[in-house]
Amino acid sequence: MLGIIVAATSIALIINLILKKVHLPTIIGYILTGTIIAYVFDLHEAVNNHELREIAEFGVVFLMFTIGLEFSLNHLKKMRREVFLTGSLQILVTALFVFLIARYIIGLETQTSLIVGMALSLSSTAIVLKTFNETKEITKPHGRRVLGILIMQDIAVIPILLMISFFSMKGDASLTFTIGKTVLAAIILLSLLYFAGKYLLEPFLRYVSLTRSDELFVASVLLLAVGSAYLAYYFGFSYSLGAFIAGMMIAETKFKHQVEADLIPFRNILLGIFFITVGMQINFKVIYDYAWIIAMLLPAVMALKFGVIYALVRYEDNKRVAFKTALSLIQIGEFSLAILELARSQSLIDTTYSQILIVTIVISMILTPIILKNLSKAAAKLIPEDVMMITNTHNVSEDTENHVIVLGYGRFGQTIVEELKAFGQKYVILEHNVKFYQIGKDRGEPIIFGNAAQRHILNSLNITKSSAVIVAVNNPEVLYLICEAVGELTHNSKTIVTVTSEAEKEHLKGLDLEHVIVATNQIAKAVVDEVMYCRLSNS
Image (cartoon, rainbow, N blue to C red; front, side, top):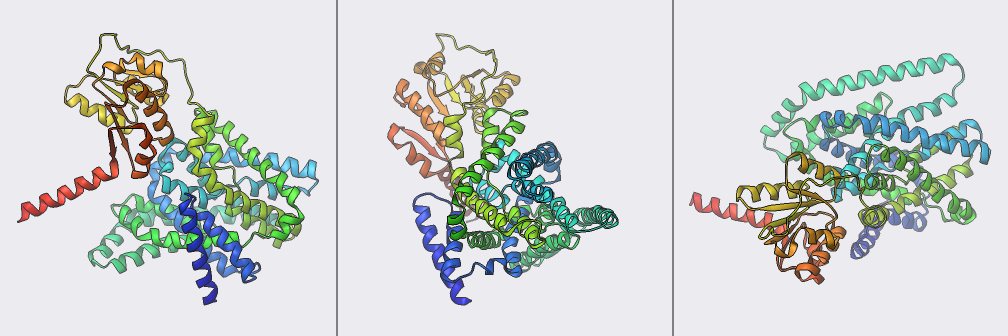
């Protein structure tokens, strides 16, 4: 066993070092590691080991716990539409389409078709949220949509598993009893977690923190995460649902950030194990024998999920948010693997069908990190931002000069504008996002709606007579196009650009920009300046 652990660690390290060189996520490396060790050590049957599955699942548990830390009860209340309406409709509509195809075109049994439909309606919480956490996409509009749908999918696992249990039962009395028992268990679980979180959690963490022992604090955090997960499991629900609720409880306390920092190492290690077990389920014999079925099934399911999610989100939001949300969730998730395995063990689905679906699911999960990595780039190229019938209330006169042009009125742009106001500097704002344009318009700002990458719009702002052009855009691909357009008109002599990292600065290298500010460098400098000031003050 120790030899397998050493080999798996070595393989994962080597593969991920290579993948980092080509800017691919470590998730793919872990999945490939699982496939390699499954064949080298003949571990295909080991993946069905109950203990290994539970250890691997705790990676998802800790992930959901840390996601809960970012979304308090107030956040969840604000997201109730995304969770309960959009999320529920996505599951039901997708499952219905799959059920009709499986039952009336493929000819599967009614119960089997229902199980397959429900399983394929779920997406990967582990991959999507891990990637979105790393890229900070979780805080963006499409990230909020994605999170809401995934939370509902996690909740939906409970009735899906109950459905499989019902199909294995006989008699209406058992069915009624099981439903009543589940509802009662849900009420008790939520009540316990809510009152413990509201009245006991903060005093407990405060008492532990007074010991000034990092070891005890970390142990307490692990107890809270694992204990909440086990409590949910004890009442018949998924581990991750209990962990998510516990995370939301802690988010209401002042210990939120310390808890998150202590838990991340455990989360990442266990997530690695989870993805290795996913890779262990890749069976090349099944792929070879049923390649044509998998080749048809995979794009068909992904296209169906994209269409359903896009239509639901587009009804309430713009095309770009709908596109990003749908593209993020086209894969099939890890809970689908558990559902199919349970259905197979209860003889509710044929073993061959189960294997075909499992391989299809795992391939979709392998493709997901690549899709998510190119999400913004694909959206920028394929889906232009929605243009509404907007009448600009502000026009720049031909004799305007020595003004500052602010390209972008997001959070950063709004902060820049406030600073310009404080100095009494004349400015004009150009914004292409309808939401931010409306915010500026409501505040009475000199704001114009338009695409900053279009030269004729930049000319309408008297850009050649301006004293400075501040580019406040956080999309690297769009940023390059804007700087390119500005550079053709001003040679970028008065363009000021902020980027988040040195890698983004390197991306703009060919544009001959004189003023590129790397945010992380400026923050680091400010912190060091404060440290030196404190030293001088205390000496």
